Amino acid sequence: MEYFIRRGGTDAPFSELTLSGAKITRKKSAADEFRAVFADPSKASGFSTGETIEVYAGQKRKFRGRIARLDAKLGGADDSVEIVAKGPWFDLESIVYQQTWKAARISESGAAVLEDCQRSKVVLGQNSQSQKVGVAGQLADIFGYAVSKGAEFSVGEIVADAEMPLDEAKDLTCAEAAARVLKWLPDTGAHFDYSSGALPELSVLPRSELPSKTIDLSSGLVKSVKVGSRPDLAVSAVSIKYESEHSDGANSWLTVEEDNYPPDAAYGGRNAVVMSVELAGMKGSCQIYEIECRSIQPNSAQWWRDRIPALSDAEDLEVLSSKRQDDSEDLPRFLVSGTIHPSMNFLASRERVDAVVQYTDKSGSVVKREIGVRFVTTNAVTGTYAVRSTSQYAEPVPSGLAKAVYDAASAMQYEGSAEIFGADADDFAAAKIRISGGRSEWETMDSPVCSTVEDLESGTLTVKFGPPTHLYPDRISEMFRIGRPRVVPYSNNSKSEGISAANRVYFSGMDSESDGGQGDAEYSKLVVKSAEEEETPGSIELDAQSLDGKGAAKMREIYVVKNAKLAKADALMTEPVEVE
Image 1 (cartoon, rainbow, N blue to C red):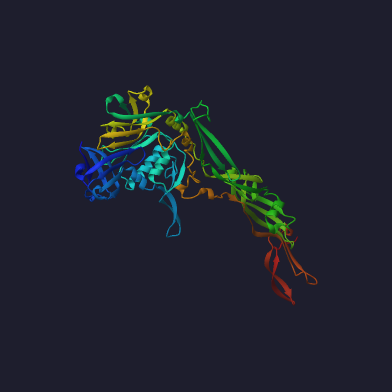
Image 2 (image 1 turned 90 degrees about the horizontal axis):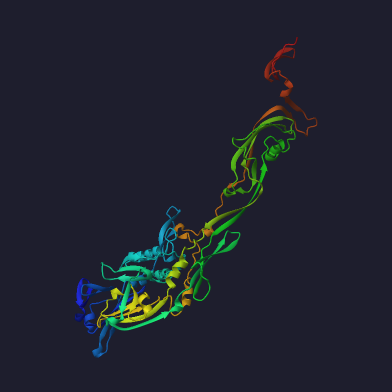
């Protein structure tokens, strides 16, 4: 098989480049690598770090990635240059994942406007509209963001049907963000397919979706094999306790919801995973409203004395008539102090109550006036009321996560390796291993491949298989730590709203008000007095009631005798009436 490197549209055979020791390492959820040594250092002079190369075996592409290192070794006849290129996962390790948030900006007019901005503070499990997304949706967003920033791969199938709790973090690379999401599905991994398409295709598949590949010990192509069972890693049950701390401003309380699988299993025994997962709780405020209300008595003289200060001394005050607006029969009281909040479910209206009254003032005049008062009328009663408002709703409890973890980690785990002659890494890199010709349990063990190392020079393939090493370095206790590094977002709706709602309290409602007034006066009796300090004070008294049906008294011209002569004068009098 002839191997060559393609770069910039030009193919160069390994023999021409004096390459030796060429190996391609493929890893699950990690960066694949191509390593080789230029026996003639001058052949490496045209290569540079950051450059994209492709490795072909005949017409089949085996690898595509960027040159990460060119290490020169100088020592006489042993001069050489080692080339190390890393696959597209290396792009994920080089790009910081960011999400779209709403942030305030002061415009030229001085007004605050919300606009989109990219932040390296992220909330995994949530989109830019502050809506919950599952593992598959979150991974698709991470990979899509990386591609938009120059990562050279395409996104293929993502099979990760599980919900996840919200997880707040800062300054994660796309690779770190993906690993943080994948921890909730222990048997799921990411693989690249280099064989077709312009760019390598990234797929995320669980163990159940991987094709089975059988290694036949009797084929004569197996150099060595090592297999060991790990019953200590098989999970017997999963119990996830979702804890939420809630507050309404007046009280705080804890809720705990359990997700257990299998439903009839005993929890807390050997190899039983028990984890506490904190979720963002409901955040609210509690405002205390004290209101005072009094009855409306528009036909009561004393009620009007209390409303109109100018009438407080009118002892003979009489209410001649009163009037309220239409549809006011359901509002028998008015608000003296406080605020009626809509959540109290009371009726309230701003209304004016009018009346016509008559009274005698301090001078003795009998006054008739139109008076009125404007205030908030209501059917509320005096009391103290608590009004609660929610600034952040509780994070929903993920559904079926315990089952997803159990399904991924409950089966018997096998780990080991096999060295095979003439095998193709493409057949094993995204597969699960079975071994025939050995023990019977190996024929159905379906152990996922962790990595492959393809030695292009010797034609041998080393396959390592077993549980994911990032979750099981040595013992099952690592499984219990899935949720420990997670940070619960303080405000899980601030991404789309651009505000921290927990710090804001909105006051609304109808406040008490009182505005009384009097109309023009009409006098039925007018008394005008001279100054009281005079020795003999005088007064003028005009009493319309004393006319007793004699008509209007007004200024009239009359004739009188003055100094024995006829004279004219004006006098306040009624129309003269003949006397029989």
